[in-house]
Image 1: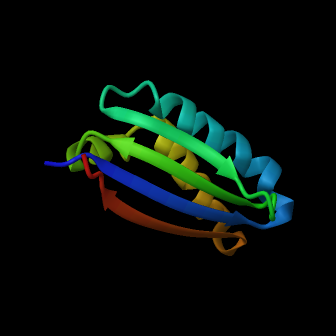
Image 2: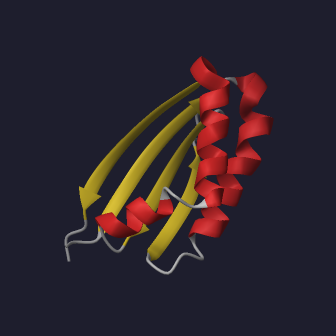
Image 3: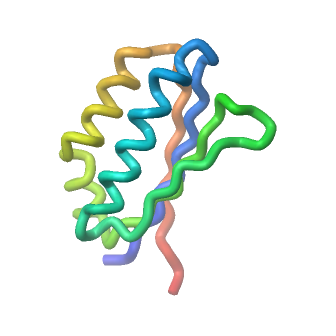
Length: 98
């Protein structure tokens, strides 16, 4: 199994940023405490303060699967579902080349 990098782009309706941003940051902070999460950064676009890029690194696919079952991820994910079409999200997985 190879180390996984997950790149997530989230664009949020300006009216919802103040509601979603704390959940994004809490998810990242708690994720960094997970044994097999090697990094989780939340970045904001210099051109658009409503667009965020997550850079996540996991030991392997199993570590990512475990992450997706944690309370902090589910908190963030459930809020995304609640906000519905006020949030656009894309995600792409990469294998890290060593």
